[in-house]
Amino acid sequence: MGREDTVDSYYAASAHPAPERRALEGAVDCDVCVVGGGIAGCSAALHLAERGLSVVLLEGHRIGWGASGRSGGQALFGVAAPQAKLERLLGASDARAVWDVSVEALTLLRSLLARFRIDCDWRDGYLLTAVKPRHVAELKDEVRELTGRYGYRSVRYVERAELRTQLATTRYLGALYDANSGHLHPLNYTQGVARAAESFGVRIFEDSRALSYEPAAAGRVQVTTARGTVRARQLVLCGNVYLGKLAPALAAKIMGVATYIVATEPLGEARARELVPGNAATCDMNWVLDYFRRSADHRLLFGGRVNYSGLRSFDAPAATRARMLRVFPQLEDVRVDYAWGGEVDITLNRAPHFGRLAPNVYFLQGFSGHGIALTGIAGKLVAEAVAGTAGRFDVFARIPHANFPGGVALRRPALVLAMLYYRLRDLL
Image (spheres, rainbow, N blue to C red):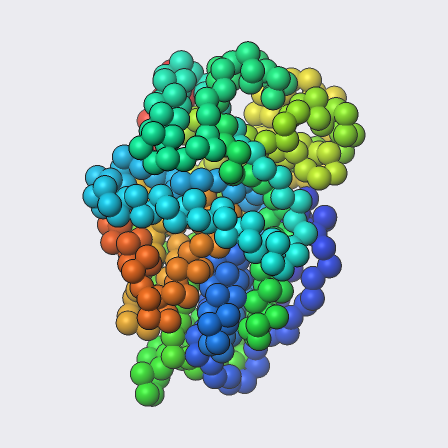
């Protein structure tokens, strides 16, 4: 299989130079083998190596090739599942523990940027916007819940008049603003975490897809690639939707949902600042949502238009540009320079899915659109668990997850039908 180095995205075009790491050839031994070179895998490798463990990381393409290097770049508080749902699934105490980890995720992200001098255009600020009157009521309730019950003081409600000074659009009725969340260049961030891991001795092999794993002698596990093997005491799977047939039991509990992003031509600092004066990342509350932010070189990056069908039958760049113009019609004259897509690994309940497939085989997946911050802390939690302190990891492992209905053949059509209901709600 030939190497797929990059996706033709704005991020790839504006990424810092990164080394081309060799493929695995022959047999190597280590304490822990990590599969997947996104943020979760690189963070797990870094935190394991910081604990003195020898680590090998296998990536099928290049570091950041998947969702970590293609996403909207928004680092957000919380998880995709509402706290009320987590309380129903876990109880109040464990749901609070999940919340606390999600807030620590943002602290960890800033710490990694500072410790390892990762240049990835970090900016503070996030707006969650109301499109409908019911969204306004929901956001006000959420602000009261977060500030009161959870003591999360960085959020506040933004009335419509003030919001017009933060976003040059009439589309939104109000917003929740969080000063603790923010946005960054995700590919540069992922590569920065990978370099940090290497500084602690992690051996990273690119173009080295893990094809299978099996128990080996002395309680170890052996991972096989096209040209080599890794023998390890522990295995951590961080491939999400790209694991393929490596772990079929995990594939049944997530689904890759295609989402698309466009990047405009450079607008110039003045025009970009007029669009989003506060430079906050923005996302709306619709089920089929829009999200956007400014780039460091004064473009607008605009995403949305999810595709649950798995088909490529519509013009995604044109559809995404049309959604952008619905928010910012003043960009009608602006050229789109880049358009790309990728798959978000969603779970049925939208909660993250962590756990074990065997006593020495761990996995992290199902970030459901909240991956920029959560993947970093997930890597830290799995490193804690491997090292023998599994309390926080096990809270997440207790979240119950059902398979997507319909099996291999019918699961996607079943999801398409379900999503039609939510799309109709967006329109009402």
